[in-house]
Length: 326
Image (tube, rainbow, N blue to C red):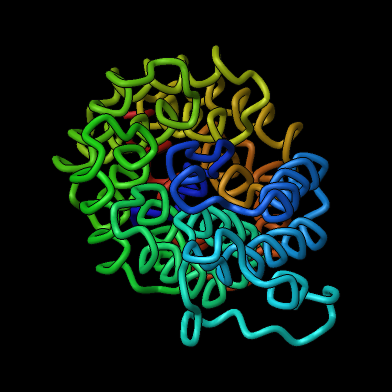
């Protein structure tokens, strides 16, 4: 039942935006590779993911063929990437010298592939980044998200452990590991990681949102309510934070306040199935079963597999109403 009233989509990622000048000096990264990298960053900012991936691919193709013994790779090798649709061997075999810069391009391209739900392609890119730079903490962070999305939870957790071992103040890694621990039912570990994340960075709404659910899991409703209030203060348009706070208020018996929060959540995002489900339960408790049925109907339209759970919720709401009147 742990995930029946909320969503843990609030993950953090790390994208490389700056080049290491020392690595560039050592390997003499071609200007063309850097240009493609920077174009990819700008395209990403504009939301043009497909073209950004093409630019990272060009940066990878050029910098992977760098031969420091000859200062730059031969022109034919540099120009071997003729266009986005031409086949190019981007494997790590048969490459003379790999520029450490290339790891950042692989990391960023992997993150964009993750955003396109190409989780296996993303893992391949993060693997390549880590073969080039085994201490690149950002690649472990990002690969953990891809493993998690692909159902490999243990590998995801191991990667977050590695990221934190490499970078003790890695806010994003603590944030994500706390979320993952909560999903696994490791409430003590989840709270420890999320506490540490907030120590490192205390103005991120997502982390308070995550910790609010972790506190709810151990039935610390006052702490949970405080965290959801803080999340909403930082991000007033965060629909899932209203859903979370409404759930806490419902558990505290404040049904009308809970309904007000579910109303706000659904104003922002009308597809939050759990807000319909919980608002329906609160309305049953208050005796408004006709309005509750409207909510349950909307819930079923979004998620038909909840039919049995809705029936259970209706009976629970009726039971709580009877108990409350005694």
